[in-house]
Image (cartoon, rainbow, N blue to C red; front, side, top):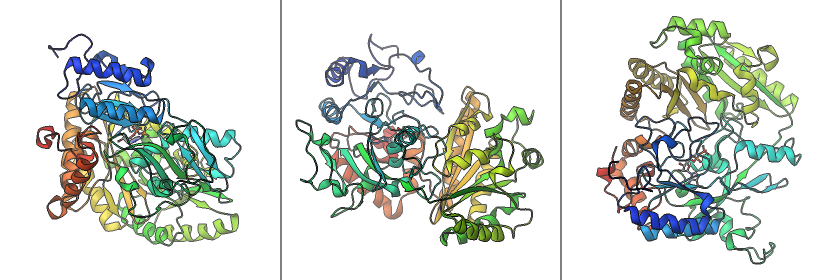
Length: 561
Ligand code: ADP
């Protein structure tokens, strides 16, 4: 930092001189306009700390120093042709570029890049249109900056919200496109966002424009936009209706990857099923977990459970409703007795299952009977509908919205469990089996508690597996806690790998370590990923290090964290 020249950012792109950086920025300004280029020149500028107004330049929930994962500049293109021009410019200068849509990927690094000094490519600031919602096709075509809240507001404004539902994660402020790229989940029957996407438009690292699936086929019957660039032309009429097109299916390689900047994406919307009933089932004992999970498997596979329900640990709900200090004076992990007391106070179980029934009343009635009867076999299980819970702040009232795709922001609060609360997500995949889930729970809980933190988690139930989301809340102003939480998550990765459990997604700091656990046959998958990376991005400019994939232009060992 002592050698910092006037006008330098906090971190220059690796191998880039002050002069080259200035010259790059000058050219970038010619492309996107001065108002769309921000050089990040001082640590004191990194003031944003909240999801509601997220930083576009650094990781707000930093486990390292706040200015480690930081961009040199944030550039916000206005159009696809400007994205193409920026890619070309990055190739010319050998400067790395990290695309993001909104930067609310909190718990996994937010908008921050893996390589300090990368250009942050803010895809959401200007490119935020809902391009189309088709009522008959039940889909939307969106740009990167469209959030769940935006898409929902669009449906309301166009009086379509009673006909078409979106699927939202726990918080509605993220990008519909960005979340699908990270293979995030929501909670309606359309909860697997990548599964429900249909068709992409992608700018490759070379700057070339691609449309996937049916989008690859020109459609002369579609209207032509006179004088418009290629990306402004309407796509094939089946682009958002059929995912696979012809030949190898390419979409997957643009998710959790560094092979393209996605500029448009189709997403299927769920047609209002004609009836909806959210519910909560509470289970009193910690040891109820295996029974609950085994019942869930049976019902989910039989599609009696029609959506992505979740089993939440009581402390997650407790944290939505209050800080740790509001429940206890303890600065140690809460004991079983203390947790039981909180559950009692909140009229919740140790485990709380939030589900919903979809369809007309007669269908709901039949399903409800099965659900009640099956879960009712667990001693002490209690069933609640929203009208049974008078406290309007209760989590059931929030989930009642989420499970029908209405975006909310209420669950933001659990991060304030500790003062200056920040969080990391540890997210291993589990079988939907009582035995496996319980083993994973006990192993992760032991480590979290040993590290001095409260164990807070939720299991979100997919088609055949569960995403076990362990929420590691820490005080970001407490160096000791940061060090402990960092060490903890590294230990958890090792422990879980020893049982064959891998994470589905991760924070910037852990990408290398987790990628290395997916090492079947001498890292055959990583070798393939690197081959594709080097072929598509020979200069290694696009998101080097993303998900552990390093281009040949970087010394992977030297960059390992
Ligand atoms: P959120 O939607 O939660 O705010 P971000 O916008 O931070 O999430 O995006 C999360 C991650 O997804 C980014 O770090 C990046 O790896 C990937 N991503 C987001 N948008 C794009 C895009 N338009 N093209 C390619 N990758 C993207």
